Image (cartoon, rainbow, N blue to C red; front, top):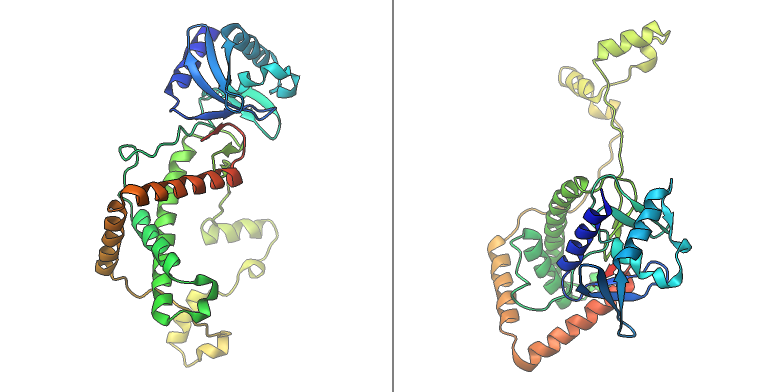
Length: 320
């Protein structure tokens, strides 16, 4: 790919960023924000100092030439301090990525999604909609229950409260596992290497696992016999065949099985109507929150989100 094409793609990625998206420089970990995109330069603003600086097209070309001329990935510590914003911006391009742990910048053979872009934050009602997902509804009900019950002392809770908690926890676990599987299937089509891919709350990595299943039993036995392994050495008692034998004999199960009784709790049924009633009540209460109370609630949420960001940020790319 020519530099001209790479530059055009990079400009497009920069223009596609949502307002408020913040990049983290890989060496000094300064926060920068793209404020303008022109044909020959990209203007960034250093968030802490509010100073702006143009990043020149020619400097990007030099950096890309260095990345492409090397046998391995380009080591970021070879850059002068004033060039720190360049790899941060270049990492927005789908063919360039920063390995924070290795301290390198490299070009990938296959386009991959940026590890860093998450877009700007927004509190507008138009951009935040209620997802039509079972896990969302059940999670909302679970949050409400956790706020009403003191789960730090489970022994003090009434049985009905414990049943409510167990039911909701079970539903959320099931819904979350189903959604997690769907998300994983999409990610597998996007991640084409074994390097960690970072998000705001964690990272993932493509990996593989080998599964084995025996061929036809007779084929396996004949193959091993030819290698000098007698059948008796690899054959074992099959519990299915033992159960079939117990049905036609007077042998008691305790004569051939070590039996251990274990008791556990399982969800028997779910009152979907009651859940829906409670859920609608929560939604009505949230939608009715207006005026000063709503402003205070939004301020509390924003403060909590900032604290979560500070605690969970990997500081390896775009920070929202």
